[in-house]
Amino acid sequence: MAAPVPVTEQAIALSFTNREWWTVIHGMGLGAVFLLAFAGGLAELYSLKPALMTREGVVKRMRRVRIGVTAMAVTAWATVITGTWVVYPWYREKIPTSARSQLLADPDTADWHEFGMEWKEHIAWLSPILATAVAFIVWYYGPGLIRHNRVRHTTIGLFVLAFLFAAIAGALGAFITKVAPVQ
Image (cartoon, rainbow, N blue to C red; front, side, top):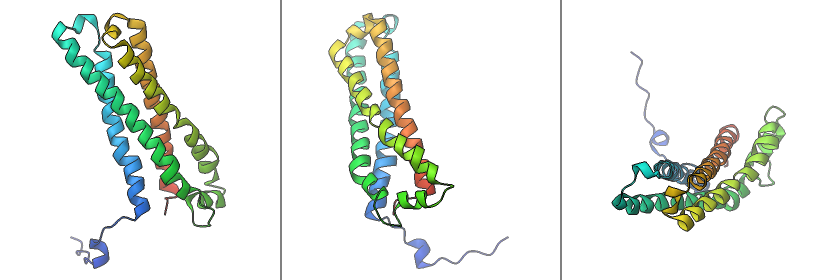
């Protein structure tokens, strides 16, 4: 059996800087809400089938689908806005210790910025745009989505694309943060 590691004050004290808190809020907090809203919204959109509906169920199901897709759109906007105007400026600071400078200084990690971050900055914005389009369609058509299979399938496709774009941006962000964290 290994000897116990002595506990020091430094090991006990767990604290986050302001930047670390914003990174956690942006990536994990909003990301978790986004995933939950997507799962709920997708399940409800998928279940809008005439064979599965009763008159009483339409009202409840439409309320849930509207909440799910609206929550995903709002969360997607909050994630992109905090990423673009709160976290990203720290990443691109023009100082040698910034995450961007660290990535570009090493030829082995420069691609993380050149491809990963550059692509992430742009693809992330597609997610809230598509999620908002889905929320609009759901609010506009309402129970009509049950009858209009093509519109419902298109809505599901846009919803999944919004999720995929966010997932790609989130994965790139996590990998980049692993290689060069914002400090």
